[in-house]
Amino acid sequence: MSLLFMKILNMSLAAGYCIAAVIILRLLFRKQPKIFSYLLWSVVLFRLICPFSISSSFSLLRFDTEMISQENIMRWSGGENENGWGNTGEDDMQEQHGADEIQQQRMLSTGSERTKTAFWIQRVITAAAWVWFGGMLLLTGAGIRKAVRLARSLKRAVRMDDRCYEMEGIDTPFVFGLIRPRIYLPVHLTEKDKRYVLEHEGVHIARKDHLVKAAAYGAVCIHWFNPLVWLAFVLMESDMEMSCDEAVIKKIGMDSKKEYSLALLSLSTEKSVFRGNPLAFGEGEVKHRIRNILSYQNRTFLTVVAAGAVLAAVGAGLLLNPAKKNGSQKVSEEEQEKIRALIEAYADACCAREGDVIASLYPDEVTALENEENMLLEKTGDGYSYGFSSPWPDSYRYEIIWGEAEADIRYYAYTSDPHVSVWQMRLNYAEDEGEYRIRECAVEFLDSISSVEEFERAYWINEEYQFVDYVQSGFVEAINSQRNEGTSSTDNTVYETPEHAAEYILNLSGGEGRVEANYSYQAMVRYRFADGNEVMIPMYDANYDTESQSFAGDPLWIVDTDVWNAGAP
Image (cartoon, rainbow, N blue to C red; front, top):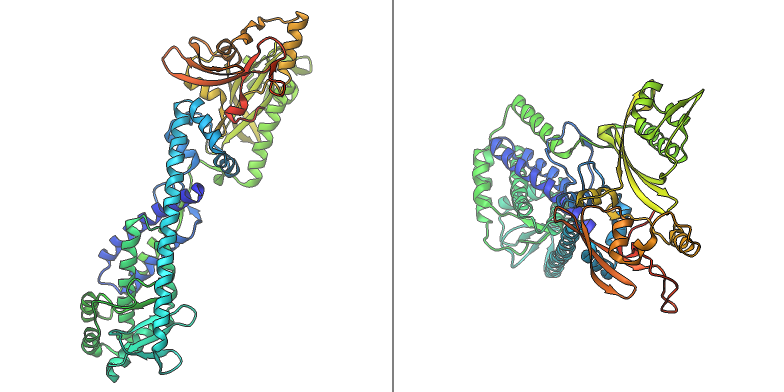
């Protein structure tokens, strides 16, 4: 529901921009035929009911039409760092939104401040989504109820021909119906007035205005929270009626303007059975309509063409979405596949320590050796050697920043202790003779994390925290075996307390951990960095057997990845 509501909010923002533009254009072109301003409202209607549009550099919209999104929520709350980590796809968002209440409570209690802020924003949006949905149902139900009641009352009408009926008890003519719209007339009309009325209503039906109003009312129901939409609905109806008046005057002759105005005045009423009804419309706003009729003059052909061309261009510009400055839209699908293949080939070769493959992904040997110096790429006879003996990355995740010709790779580097650290690598690529090649490579070893920013950069990926699961990776079994055999090359006593285990496993430094809550085999560690910022880390004793409710060995505290709701690499 929240994803749908965010989409509606984005559509409403874009439509609000268009509404403001149309109102300004109405004022600037107030002396032009009202059919122009009436047609401009179709742009607004399109924005209100159509969730998609074509992107173009010719768009007059100067803002992101997907401003409200899960990605931006994280950015606004500080959840996305300067390197662009944190993007996610729609499936990931749906999975995250589908988390149960208990899981969300865990995340709120254990996450950093930016995580908590993002969750609270999401909760507010979710609550607002249900309020929006309830309001939409109420308005829709009210419209249907009015239409049904009016339909019942019209059963008393007397048929005059296929589309025209007369009825007592109504003071003004109106059109009612969707599939087969019919004209309903008061019984007291003179023949002259009836002629004008039938001409007017005939234009409405021919132009399918009854369908336009129904669609506009539907848009109002969807965007009921936006006051500009209500204003647009009123102004659109006014332009609809005045453009219809002009069409009638043009047909029956300019000499009939006075008689037509008098007929309209005689049929005016302050209260109408169709007012507010989505399937019926009649003759309101009499004062403005009469003023428009009396001032209406035939425009020259060139004037009409020029005004129409300007308004058509503006309308097209409002229909188009702005082209994204940074995104894969600028890169063809074929090129995207080539770039993905390049990044994956590089990351796979890095994990496999294949120096020859890595060197081949650069435009030349000099560039490769200069950029890979920190990763120890060396020339060895006819080939290349690559890498450290330990630690070395065993798995990775990557993100391509399309508009910048860059990619970020996050590696998980393992040692035999066992232990894991995170490497962040930034690659810059460029096209070289029809193929893409690596131009620059920079790596940062996140093995001594001393701030919340570094913590987020290392572990916050694709809208969730990602930690290595020590159970699935076989680390718990290896540590217990080393303890029993006395073969450990490190001090395994760090796993005996939650605070020391959290600091060691997550490569934290310069701060201090404190156990906030300890429930036998589960604990919450509050780690305070040197700058005073904190993170909450859920831990549990991996040697606790939940079935027998007993400990199978010495304490072995590890990060509780289930609480973090993270998929380990």
